[in-house]
Image (cartoon, rainbow, N blue to C red; front, side):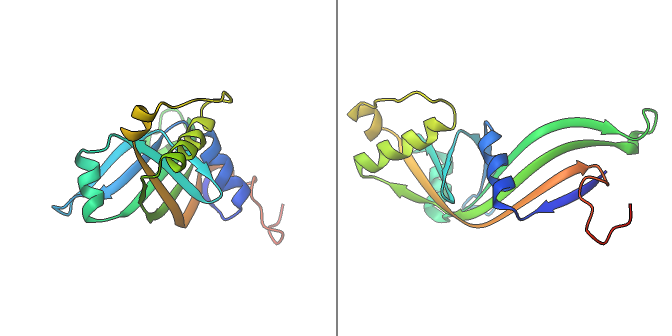
Length: 165
């Protein structure tokens, strides 16, 4: 098994689409990492997140808008030999995206972002009351850089045309 890097946007977006949670990493004002799991939406190279209007992560982003968002799917324990601990590995696919957070304040833009987030989890259409929309912080993260890896891919799954069979 090996690690494969993917640049194909279709594979990258499949990982994001199939994830049910993302992990958001920021830097605190004390210059330490802070990571939280969050629900999300994704559309056309942009990640949408929502949170309470205030809190530790908002304080962090007010100081430094840089963000790292990680998605991970298809977790499966694999091994080459059941008695050799070093042969065990977790198979998975992951995407790591980087960008800068922008907060949305306009009510209709917030509703649109909430719809994008909800489409990650449901095909239903939703209505949002004005008080609910006013009381949510909407984050928009245009992706500036994105990476995708598949861990534990079988060696024969991704042969180059020059590889011998």
